[in-house]
Length: 562
Image 1 (cartoon, helix red, strand yellow):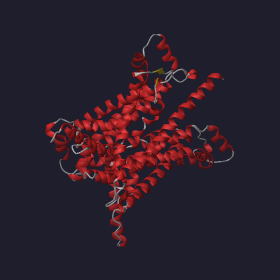
Image 2: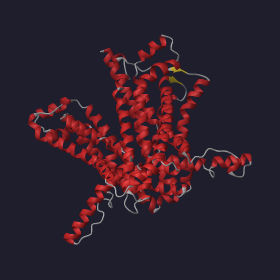
Image 3: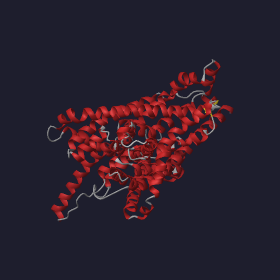
Image 4: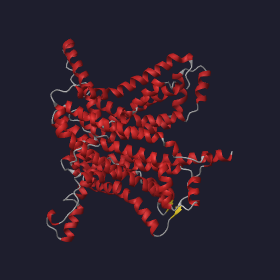
């Protein structure tokens, strides 16, 4: 803690700023609770008997399937690239991350095109065997709960892969070597030693994947899977019941808080993942050859092919047929809308993250810690839930302002905030603030407190210390935080659908609208644009995770020899 009495006024400014930011993040949640407990009519009874049971059951089954799929895929591939040597391991190590670049709704629309009755796979089967109709053969229905689990598992497993891979890398090699000395086989080493040590990391990765699963609206809509998210969307727009949507949103929030507890519980036990202290060294890998190396490579390549290569090739093929659309006014307008909204939101998230992280750096008292933690929960709030919570206060303010301006000056301001896209930027900032804050907080953590003390000795206050000392050092971190936030905003779909102004399209909504009309070729070009933009942070993430581990290893080796 760097707080000193001579700067107590400035310190209080940062504390107040953090509290205001936390209040802005919590405002949508408070609005949801308010509208849910004060609805018009007996909505809850109807929802409780007709909508909620089916939606809740479907959501739980979807989360169970996605959780198992991502867990098995992420853990298995993380173990293979971390603990085994085989041809292609280095490529698989970073390529297993690339499905993160493709939003679930884009992969969903791609596989509907590939595996549907009129798609190339079933058409080939009919040509080969001479089948005439779908009644002549059996083929799994992609527009189903199983299809949704398949697609989401293929896209979301990197969350588990990342956390588990990091856990395997930092596990004490001496612990693993002792197990080998005692006669543990590779399978025994995995199940009895490495896997129990990695359980907290696995829990964190699975909970993150399930949060993304709960947030999805595009994939479940394409597949006709009526989850809680779909029911919130349907109740609000198709049934015109904002109160009912808010009540369903509360049920979703209960599930989110359960996942947050799971993630926190896993993070609390994360200290048991590593061992060995200064004698830590990279784990000794098993050398695979023959059929074992082929099997290991095949297991690593399969999720890459399913989650990225197949949808990517389909998008490239369909987009190549619509190259003239590159210069179409609608496509260019969608690019511009996505770009400027995402840019504004990314800038705001970085600025707010700096304020939160710096406030906590100079004054780590209890209230501030709580405020910062509350301000970071937006990422766990599904986009549909967040949209409802933002719509209520902003619509109230717009109506109040319009009434006052009409009464006082005869001016009609209309939906000033919601109609200008301000509500959408607000949703982006609340939703992705945690992404930016994690980067910025890590950057501040690598700056020694002695620099702050030296700046104070030279007469700089906390604001001058931030602008003259910290920000120049943090430029690379701030750039990466802005980049990650920007790409997340570009891909965001649920809140964008619900809060966008009239006749306002982004790349994400263009894909959703075209795919909803079964116009897959029309959706291919904006989908490909989103994927190409999404590859940038994935490449950065792959490089930074590798360099971060190399830095940790070199630092520990230096400590061990000194």
